[in-house]
Length: 515
Image 1 (cartoon, rainbow, N blue to C red):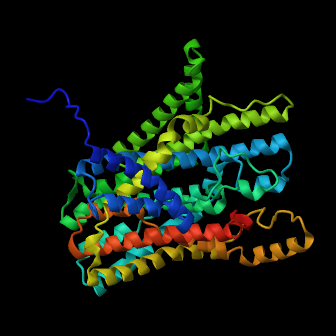
Image 2: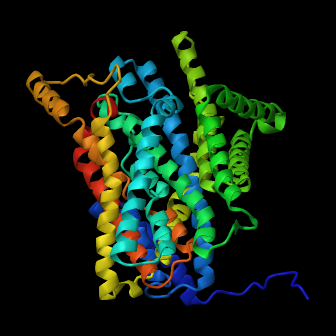
Image 3: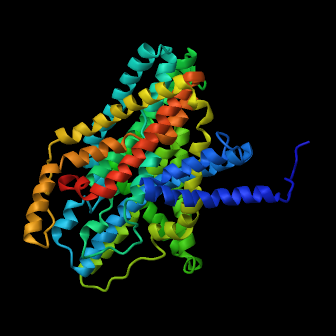
């Protein structure tokens, strides 16, 4: 007979200590690794390996499954949040410029500010070229090394190539968010560079778009892996042609919602109209935050679930939802800016802002719990103790090095790409003439190099999508362990390298038209 209730049992003291210490040490490890390695995700993955099945096995499998599920929600929110804050931080800086009248006009223009979706549309060609290069080169190198050098089967070589062709969108968002100012922080009007968020610069837009396209391609490869590795003509009960074309078509349709302006404006108008209708009744006067939270959750759930059931990825749906909700919120800031220009007294929106709603209701549980759970779940999936066989170790090192090179070649497009920006040569005014001449000459000399290096290193991390593709590809034995080495080393090396570069050379990475 089916049970109609779940028993309520008192937890053992040891279980309480394990769970509480796990949550606490996740946040400690994130801060420590962010300080020492410039990449907080590394410490989170390490704690996941320590507490989970790979090393100490302190946590039950049921606990790890629950943390994995909650962590995936954290990944969705991380991508959703990143897009919202890109848009709203732009509008916030614009309002600050208008209200205080202290920033020179070049700062309003050279940071890729005003409208982020227009930046995405303007850089989409470069993003597609970078993404395709980051997929084709690793796949080609993988077949050469694995099928010819290591003598793996073609099926295993294809599964490994698909796993290493991805770029970790979640890791990329996390690294950039830790190296960028928080939208809630007040901008330093005396130092415009302090309010420049990497995620809404031109090079950041290219990086995030290319990483997203790589993940979409990786998820499309996942759909055909069972047919390729199992010699089957169908995938999940549908013809393989449909399994390939449907995710591509749905992904293109979702991109159209974001990039094509009439479609985007129509959807955002529906979102704003829905908010206005729900906020009209008298019962919503004292609960505006709850109404905005309801609309935010409905929009995220609608686009994420719709993308999944249509054949695309939940992550892609979350990205689209963040773009559209953020654009709807940005329109309110632009309206406020118009009121400020007309001379009327301005009043910053409070409850009726998706950004404020997100910070008040969702971020307090996302930052300390859901987000660390995601990276810890990545650590759960790393077979750490089985990876130290001598043959597996050196083959993994060689493969990881080759896959690092395969992603780093994407940065060459930044060196070869024409500037094409009317503000490419705009430089911030220097406080001292002598220092200004030196800084300007250095910036112009190294302008293409550091943005290129930044993009090259940021594309290296594989992370969660690589693990998903490797596990769904049916890899076993040595090929699976070699792929785990490559994913782990690329994720760690990429995260540490990008964090170190931004900590030391952030201003040069965002110099010129790429900032």
